[in-house]
Length: 392
Image 1 (cartoon, rainbow, N blue to C red):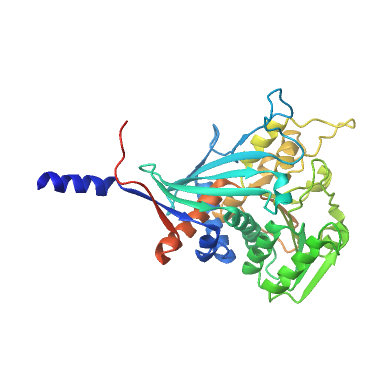
Image 2: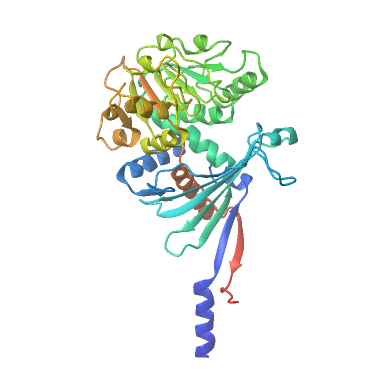
């Protein structure tokens, strides 16, 4: 009898179940709760500032590890890196605090997917117990990734924008901006006007974004679809840029277009002359990540002696510091503002540039929230890994 009891205890102690969450399950678990996601991002970036997180790379601050494909190969049918954006990225992280777990987002992407009616990128995330390494949850991550990305501009606006901001400009009318507008509006109650800049005022993507704002943002009284960057930017209080474009095709922004007191938040491309950037406050999510980008990219100089632009705001900041155009100390990390180490907005007229590139710690912390909501509500499908591990 005792032997049977011990056997049952062993099985109970070693049984592992994984919670599987489909995309529909994730929606039911609150993955699109923009306001809550902003709050979780504030926690996460605070933990980053505390040093209570880990990411990949020798300095534990890298975006992820990409599987690079060659441009050509002698091997028949070998997958190539062509203009259609074939890539796979492993994005591991540990997040401490109340989260205290490890996880990874696995990122597969191919531009040809659109021809098949699928999104360019198909994402999954896994969460693991940090003590045993046991898998806890395997979840659909397209909406997870989009919402945590969109929540970061919401956090930046909450911390850095003038509280009476009225006009929000969306540069690029894609999926990330749909999440961004929800997150920004969740924290900025005075905004009543949204401007949208796509390829044109009448493009399908611009009109799709207009319809989204009309359907989901009742506080907005005025929606303006713009044909030019200047039209979209002049007079805006908050600007969120998430433009999809080719290498070197980044739309140029003129400093003279920026309204005194505006907050310019970038999650994608950025192109402004370095001399104009000097006088603005510069904020980044994680400066170490941009150091890594600069080291990897080996950005050169133009014939006039000026540095080439990178298309990444935070990377441009790092290169400007390397070239002595600005001081390294003038680049502020968002976590320093959250923890009260450095000031955020210091005047109503101050123009603030914010670089948001995205980190796997954000996927892990928001994934944790959705996972625990699913557990509480009985959402998802439990998959058995084993009752007891087998030996060979």
